Length: 358
Image 1 (cartoon, rainbow, N blue to C red):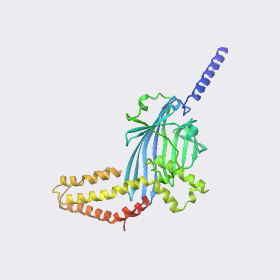
Image 2: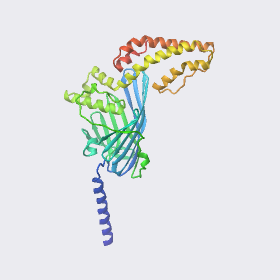
Image 3: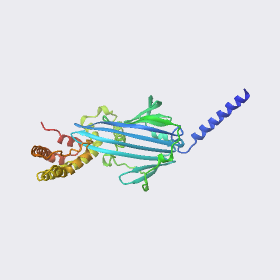
Image 4: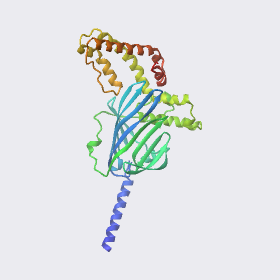
């Protein structure tokens, strides 16, 4: 009995020592030593009348050493449908190592290095949020926290849900598979072989409307929600009290990246369709006809989620007439809207331009 008591005391001391060591780990983020989390990414909403966006993708989080080393990857597709057609693929790669954060910019093929905020990670992660209850996600009970335009559910500091929302538009990252305590291979936490640049953090008093907003929907909603709720607090208002024009103004900010892309795309596709129509009038067989429309097909693939090739399968007289009539009709409709498109200032204006005529 004495031996068993000594053994239990020794085990208790060992466990307490382990917890004390974990609590004192510099840069510790989570109360679990290691793990891998798989997330579903979803969301969307109506960004303007007749323009709906949807989001779908996956994410993974690998961490070891209590989160001192953490690696997050996200890949998702944002699609706008209805009066406007737009598609953007977003790839996010972040690494937290010791007290540094590394963000991969795939467009410039660079890695931005910046220091982590000082102090406790969980305190920083839940800044200005209040605990509202508990939920079970992927089989784990997590504490739900809510703040201005966001929700987060944490299990021992590990985020199992991160949601941003603004004016009915949302971006949700929710855990669907959780493996804790497993060994995380170093190969799963490797950044691309891009040059690393130091990123200087600085304070600014520039208003949000003057800042180039991010295109990543989660970052965009986070930035705008923060700005919106600051404005609401200063005016002692709630989101429900906003007038229709005010709501439209904020939604226009959400859709700014779509507007900018479409305002460039629409005149370009019009000129490309005109060139294709001239080429089609001279095509002698379906191979020549398909060569004529190749640029149109490729342009549509870049901005639409439609995976169909839309190649011409026949070039007999009835087919020629039908296809060229379709080109004439589409060119005429789009050309009639170009004055409105050029004058548009935001996605609401552009949506109104593209409203089908009865």
